[in-house]
Length: 332
Ligand code: NAD
Ligand code: MG
Image (cartoon, rainbow, N blue to C red; front, top):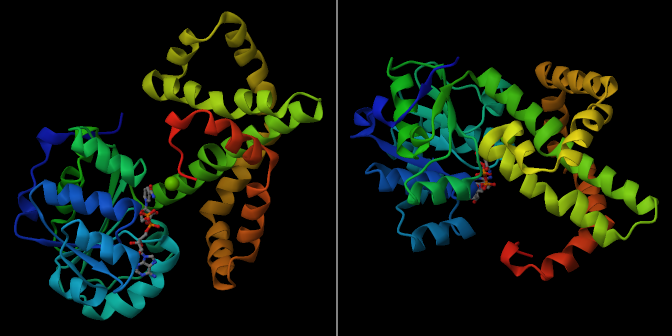
């Protein structure tokens, strides 16, 4: 079993006199900066002047600078803005302000692993990647809990980089839940695979295919929505809480029998073969190259595919049905 680090095994001494610059005040940036500050660490923000985040960060009591200034003032520079922007910002606003013993931190390995950012040899490079969305990283911290995280060291110039990464993970509350060591390669490849095959791509394709099958057979869209989308959360919550067997204890024997006999007919050998193909595209950098090029030409395929799904019947039906369940609190 892999070694998991918890609160009692990590102290934050190494960060005591360090200035941490968080670049970005979005999903992760807002959570990390507030959590680190509440953990007693010195946090500044590096943002674009005049932007929405700039205003919000100041309103929320943060010390805010332009990115170039924050990089100069900081010992640790954490990249918490979109992965697709990081390489350019690094080149224009970070690289020339780096000096020996500064540390660069990431919450996802993409740009380092795929060589979009190539740091000089005289800095530390680490990753702390929370395994959950930013707002939850903040909310659980406030509640005295935490979101688990992965950490990794890519470049250890100071010989303290591992300590810095673990301390940072503690500062955002991750060691309360458990922190696991990985590499930039492993985190990047498994993260991309997970979101493509299971969490995002797999789940949305499964929901839509189930919904469409019922609609084509003449069932009411509303019934199909409840069955294929709404109830998913209830099942996933149980799986998240106690695993697959625990979830099965909560469903009827009929549901369980359908589960174990029909599930394997949905994820077939052909599906597994496709999973392996997708993994290979990730490992060989084919996906990364495709996504970088797609961004360079203004995202035509990405935008068209998203638009198509926004207009799907399941979205229209869902919008009406969710109005009757205001406690779901989905922002429109
Ligand atoms: P985000 O989209 O929420 O970032 C928004 C912030 O980035 C804003 O403050 C915005 O002003 C700033 N920003 C946008 N473009 C910029 C630019 N060109 N220059 C400077 N600032 C810019 O980002 P996020 O979802 O928090 O992701 C940050 C990092 O965390 C990424 O590496 C991502 O892979 C990783 N991560 C995210 C999540 C998540 O839940 N969102 C989970 C794990 C890891
Ligand atoms: Mg991910």
